Image 1 (cartoon, rainbow, N blue to C red):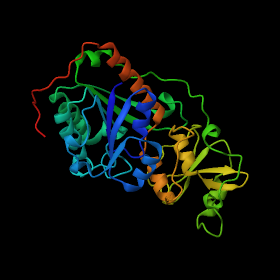
Image 2: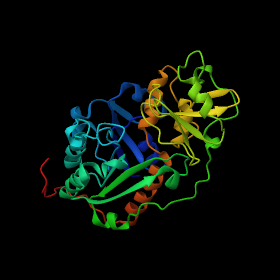
Image 3: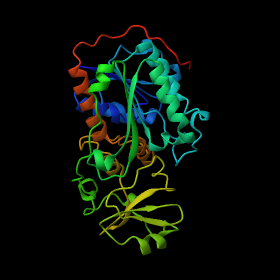
Image 4: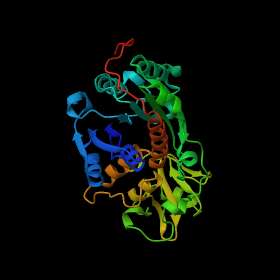
Length: 331
């Protein structure tokens, strides 16, 4: 079984997708202690709660696949878009530092779609050229969760798959689109009452009049956009964000028989395609759970990519790990 180590693990969405595709996750890293609580509740392998700058190659075993959903705020429209000028953007080079020593057979990376266009495409060009200079063959594609993961969420992400062996690279193809059969009502409970804290009340919400006058349908999801209500008419959930639980921007809302409410954290994880048995800690603040859901990945998309990676690796029976590579790129 192919072994995997994950960087920037969050709550383990990428690792879960690979596990469901038949990979053996042996180690992961995450800096956020709150996220690590959720991670450990759902995974049994070692999780190192540590700043990636302090991770050394000897901290985890030799592996076949190294994954990383490295922080996206530096490249996101919702963030500052500073790219490599932002410390979070420079975390790519920490991945590269470990790749240089561990030389995994595959490197799998995930980030926001806007990474591709950031700085006129130069940022993405640097990432690809850096991987290629380290001997890797790179494929990438932007995939939307509602088109490639059968989840009712509009979530576009760039997926990068880099192979040390050209034969693996040539055998790999990204999965194709699939029909969207899951509806909002499959992942969100429109019919039953949930805890009172998720409902908006006139006496506690200064913009309640706007919510009441604009939110009328049970067939869609709305968003509170700080100053106005936006109806999402596409029949899917808009992209979940890390700050949706703070009461500020991009808060997804629904209309029910019991009132207007925000999605519960569990529903947010459902919208990301996490399985029903995925556990959420009972002792964490709601804001942390919303952040964890918003920062995570669409698990079924990762799983489908992982399945195709496995097909490519299985087809190449003559693979031998290259011990040394000639580097043409300086970090």
